[in-house]
Image 1 (tube, helix red, strand yellow):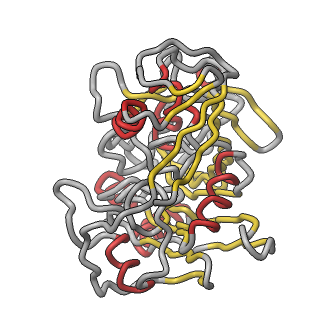
Image 2 (image 1 turned 180 degrees about the horizontal axis):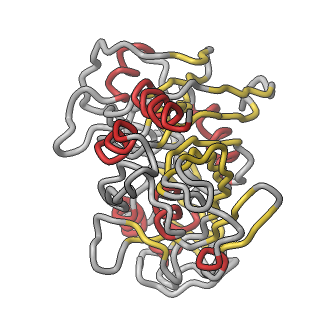
Length: 344
């Protein structure tokens, strides 16, 4: 049986336990959970400078290098589904799709059907990557169920490894469009006083380590000792009074790609995304700040107003530059029309 080795270097600031340190070192898209890493450690599939390590709790330090040998992919018991896909780019090695809001990327409890993976199984047939221990489309990165936009998927292991390396090196261009409450500004003393906030020409830089919320394990949060995360935010258009906008269209550039990163960072900055049911809540709109229709559209928007609009990378096989953009999802366009009408 073939094996896929992963060479992982314990990052600075990583937890001292081996399983946690390896989890922090994994490249984005490796598709290995911490429980899967623990199993691989117990099976003798992890080795360091001193040889095989079988204790997931052993203490390790920054800079130590470990090899994780991942077993060859096995068939995954998933049924392909004939679900239409909006394909932005496709060749023999990879496919980029424009995912609609409401579609889960991979099956999970409560979402066993109608997922992007099942649609890809039907669309791509047998030409799919199998890294991660199960035959599946090569999911290199994910976007939340209720986030729309561009997602690249590997068809071959070579493409998967090449793309994963680019994500790990932060060389992939990823820009999202979002609608947030208020408008981030360097002139806001509250924002300027937050730890991890800095300002670059035209951009607000948010640096805050992200990990599970200490009290609510279903949420992520900016926490000390979490995984390094950086988001850059630029205001494109503000709505409402100039001195205190009600909402803004922003563009967010990811330097890293942590779970819920944009949503967590924007909430941390005090500008949660419109419609976000986990990290935000509808805000009161002062009378006269917007037309009633626009105010109601903001308050009632049914999902986080987040769209993966730009994706750029070097093709892992042909080495050509691939850069794609996606139009806003229809519901975001409708909300923008209401907001812009309120400015007229």
